[in-house]
Amino acid sequence: MNRKAIALLSGSHLMADFTQGAVAALIPFFVAERHWSYATAASLLLALNLSSSVVQPAFGHWADQKSRAWLMPIGLVLAGGGLALVGWMSSYPLVLAALAVAGTGVAAFHPAAAQALHSVAGARRATAMSFFGVGGSAGFALGPLVATALLLALGLRGTALLVVPAWLMAALLTANLWRYPVGTRLGARARDATASVSANAWGAFVLLSFVLLCRSVAFAALNAFLPVYWIGALQQGRAAAGAALSLVLAIGAMGTLLGGWMADRYARKKVIAVGLAIAGLLLLALPAVHQPRIAMALLVPLGLCLFAPTSVMVTLGQEYLPDRVGLASGVTLGLAVTVGGLAAPLLGWVVDRQGFAAAFTIAALLALGASAVAVLLPRPKQEREPDLSVVRPPMVGDVP
Image (cartoon, rainbow, N blue to C red; front, side):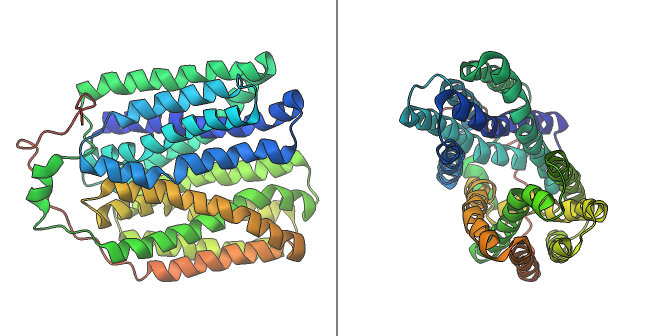
């Protein structure tokens, strides 16, 4: 496992998701300075998510055809540049266009970066992917903090400064890929060398995608409605509600690392199935708890178990499609996340009519169903490592 390369890729993932996290902090500033409605301002998040996630499988498929490691720094350049322009655009359509640029950059980055991680992780792929996932989680957390501080001081045009960290990381990524090459694909010769001992398991990948989609919707329910549940059902203040969500996300980062570590020592599907089963049971129990302290304590194992399978599922998807690592990464990292986000309005409709318990029950049943399907997941075929003395890993300087 190339630790330096993994650290570089995790830091780059932090900056890519920093862009997505920062957009959420722009909403109140557009409402205050442009006098937009909350619905109009909030639609910026949907625009970013759609542009960054739906096209990720397409970028992954394209990257599978030939080495395109340059998509990583170019993706960061587009993500940072689009975000920087958002505050300077004078109309809603132009803001959407800037966000489309940023989202396209995020979409270009993720499959190529996941491919690169797959090539340098060695035998401990789940552990490496867990560090990669934690980098993204840190970016989502830092984005709103940095963006809010800048916009409070400079107004919406302060978004221009948000380009700096993304472009610095793009430069660092480009420079260091020459020092310890990170290959996104070993090329046609490597594919031919492994063709006799590995094959794409599309049926298993479809099953895994179903598991991942169910988990994504369950997380969307918790992420969207935990704060308002804390306020409306448990009669707590906004600070306590924010602390509850922050606790889940912080514990989730630990769960991601724990899940990766366990998956490299035990069967992948056991980590997925057990984690989702326990998470489903805890989601069922959460609405029945009326004491805030007990509910807060319940969030600790819930966060651990709900997040433990995340990096494992991305790794398993790559192992099911060894000749289509980019496509697998695009689906597991991008499209599945979008489906979870699109389910949030439907879950909100359920909350409006049936209450929080109904939404959490749906999330729990999805997690338990995903756990049952995960038991059916087959073991991926073991790939024979190609001879790297014969096939050189592509570098960022390679051209298509």
